[in-house]
Image (cartoon, rainbow, N blue to C red; front, side):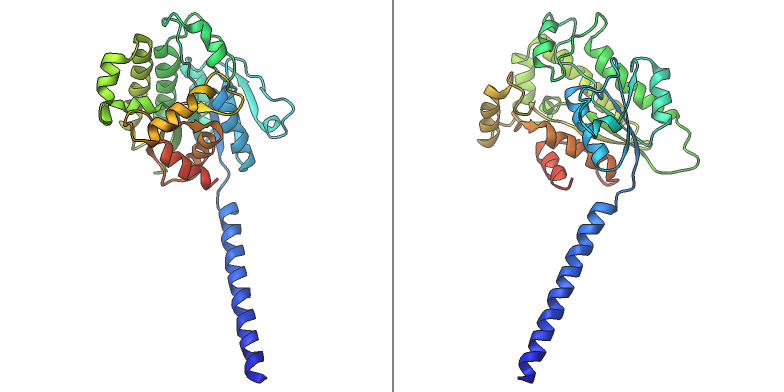
Length: 291
């Protein structure tokens, strides 16, 4: 009887230790992240709004810059905690002020069809926020120039002798990596329409610029393919096609990415000093699971 009691005591002690260890791990995973002040450029857009929501949920202080500067979800409690700012990210002074006031940045400004594509009217359909490009809305102006302004602002930000790098998540696209995969360059050279080549040129210019400033910027280059949720009726029909092509090994087609997955992965890039560089769908899925 004494040996049975001893065995039960040992087993109980082991269970308690396991529970304590599990609880400690869970608590550390939720409390280890220090809150940051984060500015989201393009915060009212499809991707930007989701990033703002998730950053707030993680305890960060969020400022969102956009042309409108209006909360796209006024009834959402988390979104009401975001500071919404109206401004022009093509203006270096506006960008510099926000970068200097924050610890990290997310660049989610972009458009699929620019004013020179001849297809800009379709942005109201394919854009998750339903935005319509202005008369100066070229890929070079909206994507490259605004992102370069952010990079310039970070480079000139007073460091106060700190060696830490400024986190910046840039929303690029999977097709920006075509030159790095089999048949990708051939597809771009022979099949890509002119507007797509211009779109990719702007994305790659930003990626190259951020890569050249790695001493000051910890850049996460997010490369999603089609971004979607169940409200994106314009892309839902082709989601299975992309996913099947990726599954069977077509090298120049990446699996699609849910907007929630992309947003969660961006938050991890902001928080984790070890995350940087190109993030394809497989890396984004892994990062999102940690959120």
